[in-house]
Length: 522
Image 1 (tube, one colour):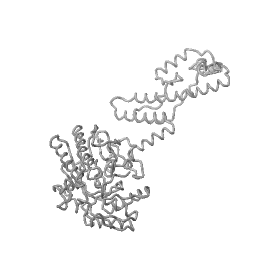
Image 2: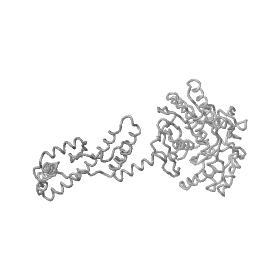
Image 3: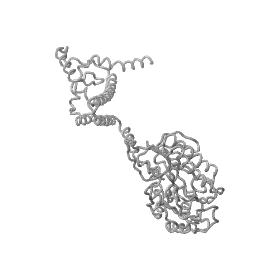
Image 4: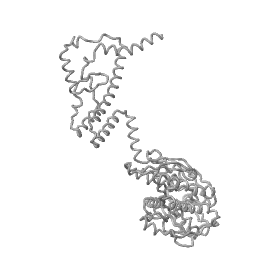
């Protein structure tokens, strides 16, 4: 049985070769030797628009090799025609017929012939692409680009339906975000040439503010790398960009050095809500100091511009109202909020020490209270707590009498301010906030009315070192970077309430975080 199977296999291999030798290449009908694809004919038609040659110029001359289908030049074709005229045929085509074959052999020969046709068609397409590139002169740059595009089109035409769909989908996904539950809207990305595209690093880019900043930078067409250790950041905030070729995610803690090649650094990495930064105060100090030191070292090495997101907390419980950048603050250096307040103050000192000693290009933004979609539902801040409580008809808790004031800006305004500061010429600290000021009690009532909630407003003991008033003086931002908030508090709250409604529908129930230290929940 093994000998018989071996004999059959040898027969399948040798039979087509013997048959071709018996027939002879020159006796095969020429009309069956050339079967151009529609894609090839379209490509040759397109070539005629810029090189002045017609499609037939690339098809003249008989094909003398059935397997490779080599296209002969006009001179070679003329010589072959003369040689054919001098040598009379030995016998007519009718007389030269192949011997009768067994039925199984005929089927195998037919299958092998079809495979040879497929291989020959592929090689024919390669020959067309090569000839097209060859007709382009070295000095015609625009023509060469057209040929490359045409070659890509011909190559694309050789793909099967599934492969074509994959290529089309990948092309679409390289120009936009993917809708997700957290970011359902589609964001289009611009195409920038290499000399205009910037390599940008965003630390803490999976957080609330950082993810919105990433959206803006991606839509501008830049290459964005996000560093995050996901202590407070969430992967779902940037999941809509994970597929994009311009986006990279590095799971890394900024307290450890990292080697990258970037042009700009947005340094946002640090817990920002009181319960979260009080959970591990030593780590909070290390993030603000060692993390900033590592990013400044990177900026110095690669000569990148660096922006630090500082905070209005450096003003402490202010005795000047509103707070200008020139105010030095009123901070308790040993209180429960000091790990964050003093950490950011030291970070600012580092920024300007590197600027003065090492000529590092720096920017510092002092951010006031910000709200919007993608806020962590358990961050314990005023806006998120009030919205979560009111949507669930739970008691809305105020710590203190509710007379303390806050100013709230929408996240898109903050992102615009950070972008303007980074790309401007002003390198001193700038307040970024909304001067629209509310008492905490009035703000709670406002949210209750907007959500049509049945919640009751309750009052608990005041938190230690909680500022009694907070409102930015943004005259520097208006003058130096041409920035001021555009979104009203009402418009921002409408978007934020809609976002938390979706989060609640997915989670079922959310228990707000109190004023004490708490680890972020997933």
